[in-house]
Image 1 (cartoon, one colour):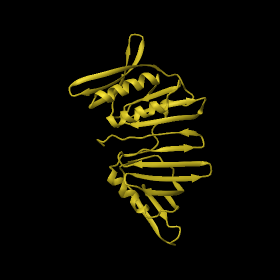
Image 2 (cartoon, rainbow, N blue to C red):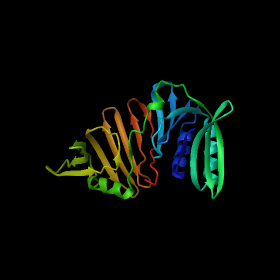
Image 3 (cartoon, rainbow, N blue to C red):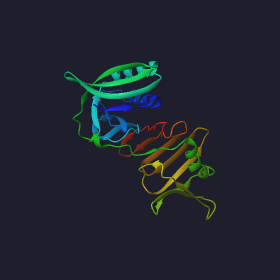
Image 4 (cartoon, rainbow, N blue to C red):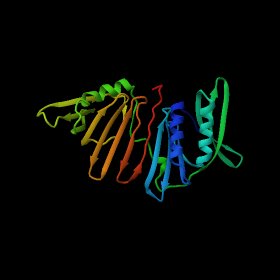
Length: 251
């Protein structure tokens, strides 16, 4: 049995994921550190992943097949009736495996069961996929990291570089020779982004930071929703990938 405590905001993201992936080939990967909902469409080169880090600890992950209608119904019921202490756990009852979506309404425990089966799908080794990119920072820290770049509303070169074990974001103004801006990324940032040079447009709105990159046939759009540590959307040449990340408020 694996139990994952998940904030209500994370359960809402999971609800969105299940709606997006409403088909007959859905998988949910569960570990103590993250949840991932996936859909395989024909081949291992085309998939959609929605990842919700939970920050609950490390453990081996397991991938299950689930029924989208059952899971959506269960999540909606918990979101409608529970105000705190929401969680997901897996268990075995008689000859079936179940996923239990639960939460508390005050001191009252409410649970919903969803039939699942352990997946034998190995085409993408879903059990080995880990969250690729998420940031555990308060919104004010996010703004402080990216604000120096938002003064430039035109395309500029933006470098993600590593020097002496530290990571920096660095940009050059296209029109002012020698005008360089460098910002240190503190160690609280957890990520797996490639080093190198990219062409980015960076826009800071009231509650949203948008970074966009276009390189050949590959386009990457990263939206940093300041209401949560990070919400990201990726689209790449290997197929369509949609990823939402939510780090718990407790971090």
